[in-house]
Length: 298
Image 1 (tube, one colour):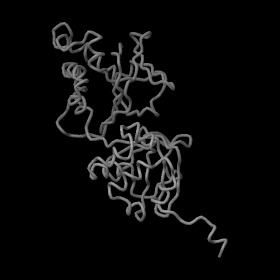
Image 2 (image 1 turned 180 degrees about the vertical axis):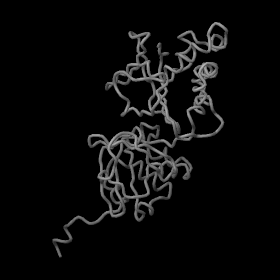
Image 3 (image 1 turned 135 degrees about the vertical axis):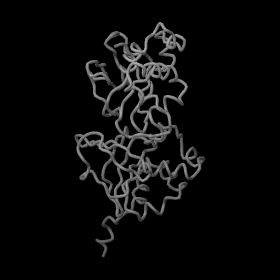
Image 4 (image 1 turned 90 degrees about the horizontal axis):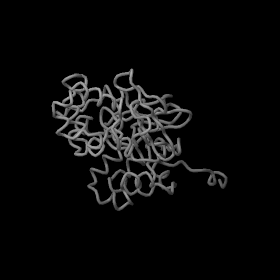
């Protein structure tokens, strides 16, 4: 009897979370959302963001989470849950395999060389097995994609000049219309990556609103310019290839340099002046945005 008492006792997902010191904000979020019982009994897979991951997403501590409406926190947590047991042994190898979350969002799971990512978030620990599923600890919070690329371009003020260039460029390349669509439809496929200059970057390149709308700049030249900022695939930062990257017109490439200090994107027309990525992994339903501080020159 004494030996059996010393053996590890089966643990639910809730018990596993209690045993991890760096999941205090997540535990507070689960309690605030009223999901404690679900993680004791329901068979699920939880991708558990660390405290550092919550802080990087703008939640300074547990009180920042508990100040939000419970239904908002519930949506955030369920965006990290798959309603089945999903250990790494059944994960598909390769990048960007779509997975359906309890939030009803479609996210992307990559499993390469024993490392798993959910969208941009890397798993620090895999396969913490529970009686009712499994926990994978990840280093970031994965937001629910609510808007298409077209909607984000329209509703984000600092992207208004790039959108104005797109609106005019459609006259020469109808394929660009998908990036001006802000009707409320949230497509999933096809998907894209946009290296998106801010208004300040556009103005620094001489692309003020007056110049974009003037006869001095043709729709064809703008189509050439904006399409040079678009990739015909979805790339989160862990999967963004280094080196030459084919753009919207596959005959044109940019050069991607990734390092511990950030990501730089270099256009062919100005190899000495790369653009810095100032914000990565802005997630849309049909793609990913990287905010950059310089217009790329084809």
